[in-house]
Length: 503
Image: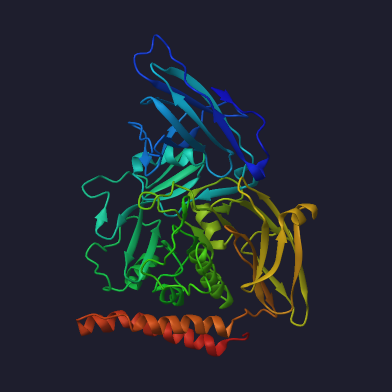
């Protein structure tokens, strides 16, 4: 087997492996042992592998954690394979170059081959740590899966409406496990997914009592409020869920899934499931669903609501690997579970499923609020470091929901990693984005007043009224109980429309 050397730079980060496994008289069965190490340290590492036979069927090795079309292993794996041709892809999260190639298993083959994986950026070295907030994989597999994806934080969904993976089992003394230096997972995250959408619950000591919840009753707000009373972090799993404006109006959400599970390694999911459907003329396939999520999030920010973006892959339910969609959180000093979530709530984040962004504006991180005296104009120069193994053509700077500048990659590089400055005469927000990676927003307050867009507040008011018409329960008392939250949200958005200070 021959390995092609001379890896291309980070912007074209793939390497090919080609060859064949030669016959060995001593071999009783056809097999191939693969050993994987970090190129710089020489130490064995965990990786994810997609292996397919000549018919394009995914190979499922016995004993390796397998999901849909991929499996993970650490350091070494022996594959017992039928004769024939095989192709593979090997990855270790977005900070490493991926490896691709093919090989042929011939009669009586028995061989061992080494593959090295090259890291092209070290985000933790810059104090950015990756997490995936939507993981449905077995707890006993999670440590290997996290190492294979170079992921540092993963709350594992253990209870999900009528399902509870801990039923009849004893919980560990500590719900958070630290391993491999500074990687962490929590074994008791939960999800309430019903007609109004999905909420994700983190950092609770026990599951919420949702097993008997019906599609519309009780309201998801009952569980959202109960979780917040217990100090939970609550994430709106997608922004286009029908009840999102109700949750938003409560002021109880901590984050929202901007890089969500409709963005998949194999392509976009081109629908909104049972959420609020997009206008397909304005948001056509194939990226329409992702752009719709962004559009809704921009309306949130335009209402003066400072809600950080998050990311989740739903591995274990949808085809994604763990960590395909990830949120990087900046944490000063030693990484801990608590500090990571504090950074997430503060908005010191970048969400991505590919390009890796490290932003800085006047030395500040995303989530920072710049305050400017009334009557003054402020100009902000955006510094951005970007590394990626995907092809990138342009970057965008979004200001108050609109593209303030679109910069081709060649021009950005020529400018030394700086983007065109943007000016503020009134309050607002801005962030950097690529399809798809996005910094969390920066905020600007002029005259110590938040910018509230009438159009955006009306957008959510109309949404709430449309949703209220869809709530139909046969029991009148239950109908009233559910609608009280929608009516409170209607009043909130109506007041915001009246309070608006921008179109």
